[in-house]
Length: 465
Image (cartoon, rainbow, N blue to C red):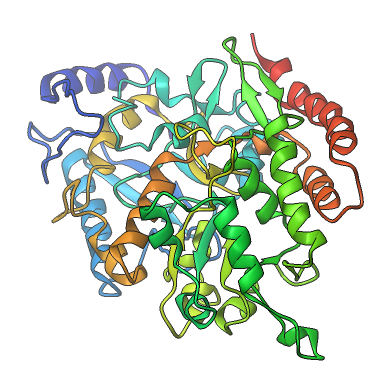
């Protein structure tokens, strides 16, 4: 339960005495394996984190001892934290917002930190209604780097405060950015096409080059459509449309200087992107897998697609035993969707989106305990530094340095797209209708714009002071 009164006062005094942090010029400072200073007695406080896994994947917040190196390091961090602060670390094996609200209503604490989808928090109005603490009100260096990048932190920005963080140097939860893109070197080689890495190095990884690859990697000679080969296929979620939009610096939602959200979907950049994908659809250069499961990567791993677009998790071996990483027998590479004619190099091509998961702090947890524990808990794990913390990730998931560099770029430069505050599925349907020719772009975008703005007002703007 939450400690208050005299204990809170003592905690603040202990913190002031023991803190030895200094302001660093770097965005991401160096951290020692152990924070110096006297240990702080939090009198057996139970510090609870929910959930035990990230999404449905294999990433464990409470791994079995001996299962892997980083898992053991995470367990060591828990043990060191318990010893340093005289607390008990409890990791729940799930995160239930319903249970949180039930226990909150009964005056009980559910967790100090919980990992939840951005969409669940936004549509449930948990932040808007005051059920979570702002980390920006705590006495921590929120922008030091250990709590996430700007895009990650923006996911929790509301009414001038920040409510969401990530344990950046743990890599958990791993970034749920989209649209990520991979290519199959074997397919490109078969059709004598240059790799995106080569084209990017030459400054030629753009829509024109992608269109040429779509023309070259195109074999529909088999009477069975399941055997047709395409450069890329469209899935039920419009990853292609969104990738083209972001690569042309289009934005679905924009925040103004007053912190209000406005729909900016109906823009020349968006229309240009949708018309590009439509031109490929009209020429039947894109495979249609829209009736397939979004998680299905069969065409890519069986050499019937040169490219595959999905969420970042599909390319990481630790996330899901059925994803790309665990089904692909040969090498695959990461890339970014090629740039469009209106692309602004200062703008990212990927976003933290609807399903992204972040840490949130329930309002009935203790902000003073967070202030003391988080700077120690979230630093690089034992034996790791700010330079080496991702070495295991690189060795286990990437075939080339170029692919790893692209993953880091995706993770660190992704922006937050605010889609949890809009009718996401309805918008996706409109985008697909435009690129398949079922709707005219200007008319369709104009019609959905009003609906999106109403949702932004209802879920976000109307709660601002």
